[in-house]
Length: 277
Ligand SMILES: Cc1cc2nc3c(=O)[nH]c(=O)nc-3n(C[C@H](O)[C@H](O)[C@H](O)COP(=O)(O)OP(=O)(O)OC[C@H]3O[C@@H](n4cnc5c(N)ncnc54)[C@H](O)[C@@H]3O)c2cc1C
Ligand code: FES
Image (tube, rainbow, N blue to C red):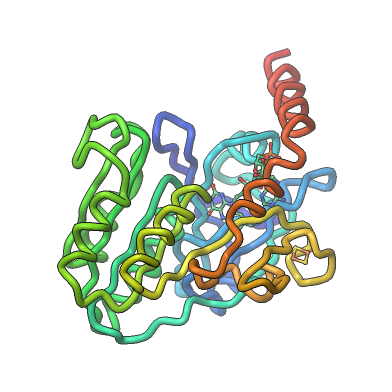
């Protein structure tokens, strides 16, 4: 068993952090990589990016939004309990390079994925501007960590409850207009990454996004995670999860993510009913 040693609820319990004992994964993992977890024998295989690792303690940290049956089951696990299986590190690590001025844009739980990448880009000498956003202040996560990981932080909320009233793309445009941006890294909901990539294309700013298609095996065998990038089929689990945002077919990705919506809703409702009984 992969034991949970720390557990924290954020954003009113809609987002959960688990620090998990996984010494071999903690030793090898790099920013941008993910793991696949199963709570128990009957559980689904769920991909989650590592938000942090501690090779000395032998732990990895995941931060996930509770969106369906499996993430609700994960939320019910307490400190001292754990996951039956954790496989990883999977996927290609982020290519970290000293480029000059870089902009890191994060939304929702994408901020957790973006944090180690932002920190890594700063550590190797880049000038890092971070822009993070959420629907409202109560569900914004990791503001302090993102402030420490960057040279300049902008916060946006859709409802204006905190920081800039509006989308991350508004602030991104202003930063790009000042010039000199060598790379934009955008991680968050698919529509956010799509619109960030549209804006950066206008400014010809190279853009990297991290894709989250439905994954099953995570090793390039099942084809479940296929995405179209530059007109070619790629498997996000082995060719990614990071890709050139200007080449990704985001509309296809959104359609594929919706494919099992009705079944997922039914599963989640049945699980909640069982929990309440
Ligand atoms: C490489 C990768 C890294 C990810 N990292 C994070 C992360 O750090 N934090 C986080 O909150 N979420 C992350 N996700 C998304 C997370 O895997 C899904 O939210 C989770 O699988 C939902 O499962 P569920 O049973 O709770 O919800 P369900 O009700 O089954 O599904 C809800 C929605 O989640 C997505 N989903 C469902 N099953 C899968 C699956 N097997 N693989 C991928 N997406 C699925 C679909 O869009 C679906 O509509 C990541 C996804 C990928 C592919
Ligand atoms: S998850 Fe099966 S090929 Fe990527």
